[in-house]
Amino acid sequence: MTMNNRLLPTYDDVVAASKRLERVIHHTPILRSRTLNDRLGAEVFFKCENLQRTGAFKLRGAYNALSLFTPEQKRHGVLAYSTGNHSQAVALAAQILDMPALILMPEDAQAAKLAATRAYGAQVLTYNRFTEDREAISHRLAQERGMTVIPPFNHRDVIAGQGTAAMELLEQVPNLDYLFVCLGGGGLLAGSLLVAKQQTPDCKVYGAEPEAGNDAQQSLRAGRIITIPAPRTLADGAQTQALGELPFALIREHVQGILTATDEQLVEAMRFYAERMKIVVEPTGALSLAVAMHGGLDLSGSRVGILITGGNIDMARYARLLGE
Image (cartoon, rainbow, N blue to C red; front, side, top):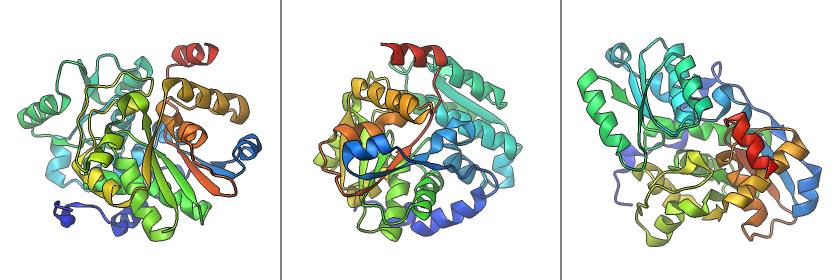
């Protein structure tokens, strides 16, 4: 690994994050489905981060990062960019910690995510995700306003916070054989790998990303970060063009593999959640189940963890997708 290891989060950072988050987040439940168990011949355990505050796991990383701000950083505030879930998480974390927040979101972001981010008290600016560089815009605005940028995945404290979701899961359901984790920029997968390596070293951890945006799969095969055009997929939370450097360093070293799912398979997984488990899961959050069902792995006789990442979706869009 060419990166300075001191830049990377450790398992101890995840443990520290869990203590900071103890009274801030929901300790989300584990659900099961006999129907899926019979289909896969396995014991499957769903970690329901769609029931987390803000409707996704992202508050874990956002609050952990913002809670470590200096008084000067808190005074000037935080700037973040995201399709929606990180935006809402940073906005709520900033509200809890009483600091200003400016959020850059794509102009085609879901209306519900834009509205929720504003409702948490953040200022929202929009950009065109297909023609403009969100990182360049963010850093220019941060310099102008003296704000601290907290990216959605390429940040030590964000990764450590996200890892607490897997830590909770493995405390609730120890000795998993497989763990499937939704994958966009790689922060959640990287944090999950830190935890699994420490707590259940024999557990095979797989990342799950859209087939139309398989930059992580390509990167793992190439041994370097591959950048792709902005993917067009239902999984708006995984429309990233490349992994972050910090997540990739951990993913390359520890992940068992990266599996992909089509948009049709995501809708099938969303419908399964709705019909069989009575929960709302957004397309990105359904990636982990979709690859468990269609990834070509023989899971029979195994204990399987499925990390559901979020449930934020416009209801009109949700009804349209499930009605097709």
